[in-house]
Amino acid sequence: MQQRTIVSQISQTGIGLHSGIDTNVRILPAEPGSGRYFVRVDLPSAPTIPADVTAVSQTVLSTELRQGEASVRTVEHLLAALAAMGVNNARIEIDGAEVPLLDGSARIWAESIAKVGTVEQNSPVSENALFLKESIKEPIWVRQEDAFVCALPAEKTRFTYGIDFELPAIGNQWHSWMPCDEQQNPDETFVLEIAPARTFGLMHQIEHLQTAGLIKGGSLENALVCSPSGWVNPPLRFSNEPVRHKILDLVGDLSLLGNFPRAHFLAYKASHNLHVQLAEKILEQQNLNL
Image 1: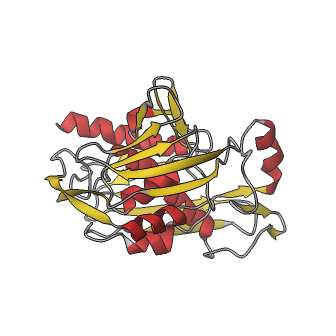
Image 2: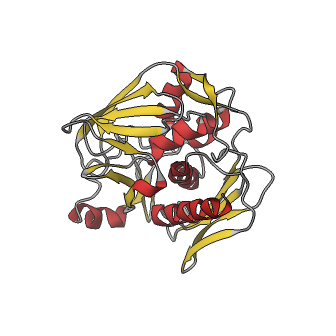
Image 3: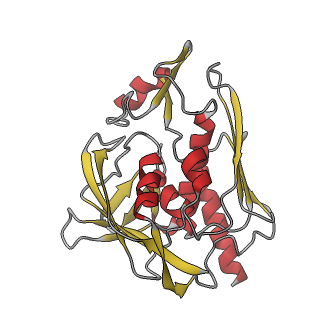
């Protein structure tokens, strides 16, 4: 299996969910073996930040990466789109500390990747890389009270997620998604089934989050909002859009491994923090097996 990068540049501009600040992003083709990485072009010397689980600095309502003094947060939607669509190597230039939320999903990123296309590079995927090749040998679990996320041995890679909310409009939802086995073309199942699912919030939590300095850039244009009486800004793109979005977040967080191992990833009421803890345990197991 050969490594892949995008054919040509992708550019997007938008507001950050938590910072409320507009940033510009350029995604560029990258050399084989360079991986997916961010470049803070607004800072002196344009420091790079690898999209790697070892670079995670915090996971409060989004995933943040840090290298030295440079950081970038809310990386999960963009990274999910790149990884799920088979882009091993990408240089992501950004002029601020947060990836734009765009419409609250990964749809715009995924459609942009599909539009420019990907190209095979003259370099094989590393023998130690994780992409539908290295398999999980034993179950790996992370839990906190009744929330958990795990990786189970499986013949093919699959993501299954469950959520449970008291609000009737959400309630208990489950969804399962399996990426294509081949990387020869962009993953149409991701583009159609997972990428369009938008982030969501609960009306009664908004004031508290804003007081805490979060979701400054959130709006009814880039997030679904649910109240006791129902959705404030329908229609939904899927009847179970919230749980599909949780799969999107899980894919983005696990992409920090570099590529996905062959496993059934199963999560229930989990969080970015639990997602990253699972990725760390998988990396630890992989290093022990080397």
